[in-house]
Image (tube, rainbow, N blue to C red; front, side):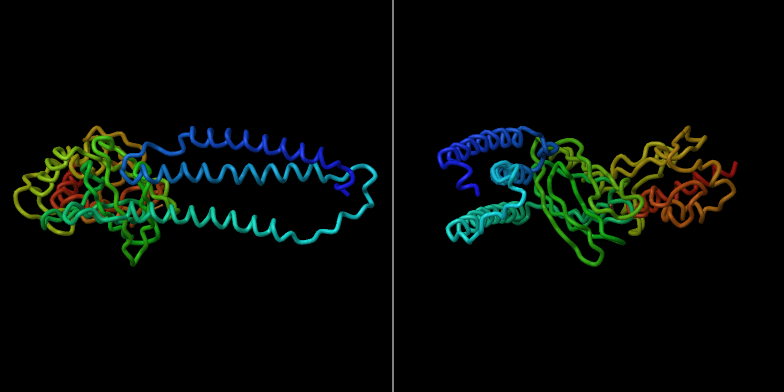
Length: 362
Ligand code: CUA
């Protein structure tokens, strides 16, 4: 019977001690919560608002955590079974309307407040900018790569890496060709599922000039064996550099399935093999493959001098466009990007096929 075993005054002192412990623990908890760098750099205007929301959540939740912990510890200490009490029954417990109203109302008010604030932030970061001041990039996920499709002044092209100007809003239309992926640039904070059959969206504005540089793109949905390799790069350029890049891209013949236009000039297949395409970010074959003629020593994929030896052009073309159709012994499907048909032009693919046929038939 606690009422009798502990005098009232002593109980009051215990409660006061608990309040002091609770206040100190709360202050320390909030200080730690706000000091820890939970996230990578905040490089979009959306990121700042999301990080502030996070800080508010830390400030709001630490006291709740401390309160619950302190009451649990207090109850375990204060109402523990003492020697000689083994056979005693506990005191009869009745409802306490006042307490019940308080512990229902306080969390309800807290939750409604936080939900309202979160909703306001969400509305704010999803708001469309003034008409015309936004670029749309279609992001397509497939096992296990992202492809970025642009439509600039009627000219369509696709890239293997994402290119964005700083300071301008971009809206992503996110799609998937196969399973569910999730398009995430941690530095921008925004993230959404890429779901087959529907188009999802979000928009960000990379900070100007703070975001200029490279930012990792991550697939945040377990999508198969190659999920961990589904990582690319968002290159944020200054407005001037981006315009220069756009000019170069729109002057090129159309990529992939679109077939060639005129004016691209002859493709240097060996250079493409060794260095990739700097404009679209298409990876160099040499990064992963060994090929004596190009001085390439990559170990991720098979040695092309061996696996392509004696193969015809059709096989080589299929190996570039649909790399998972036939996998060399000892290697895994899903590692080589399956979007070269989108990110390389038809001329580039044909030039690579011709080059590889020649050097592997020797
Ligand atoms: Cu795509 Cu994980």
